[in-house]
Image 1 (cartoon, rainbow, N blue to C red):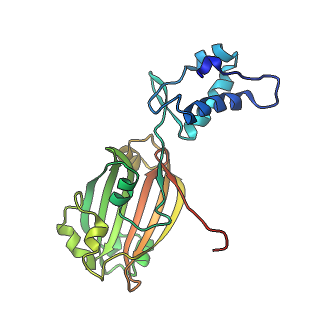
Image 2 (image 1 turned 180 degrees about the vertical axis):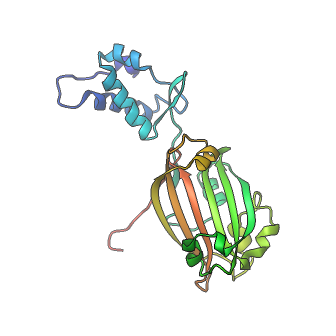
Length: 252
């Protein structure tokens, strides 16, 4: 059933913009509209349903904000690809394993890998790694991709016990895989926090999103079997390409 067969009921108390939003959403859910398909213009919707421009625009803006539509200047509004369902809040696995499980192709670009003096590292990070300003810290910055599209920028800080990663090709070999070569550096437990923030210009450029876009900031502290902190990572996930899933069991 196409747009012309859909009806908007102006006699009900249901807001008109919400009815239009539900029409578009229903056509996405039943497969009539697929990722990459364009939707009618604002003026076409106005003509089809005798709606005001404000009503049409509100429906479209909310669907864009929900990540279901995206706009291309001068070309129109299109159906978005489904967001990646990130469930690493409930399992411990590498980025590559996670992407492969989601049936997308992962890749990584190392933007920076160097040793920093402790006094150049934020005190919160040093505290998380049980280090002080006299210690040196390994800094690793990676831009990670799903099907060649950047989805997350990760900044990782590690103690000097992980010195061997400086000689590794971390675009081809995963960090966790490398750290697993020693019981002293193998990550067996993590603590994670997630919050919503707005992207900074540098992050926006690398992630190919507008400045001050919504991103999900994830902070991870990884521990070895002796409960010594080995990793402190700060990851910025694109809000328009990721969603986070947590499963809970009643009574546990």
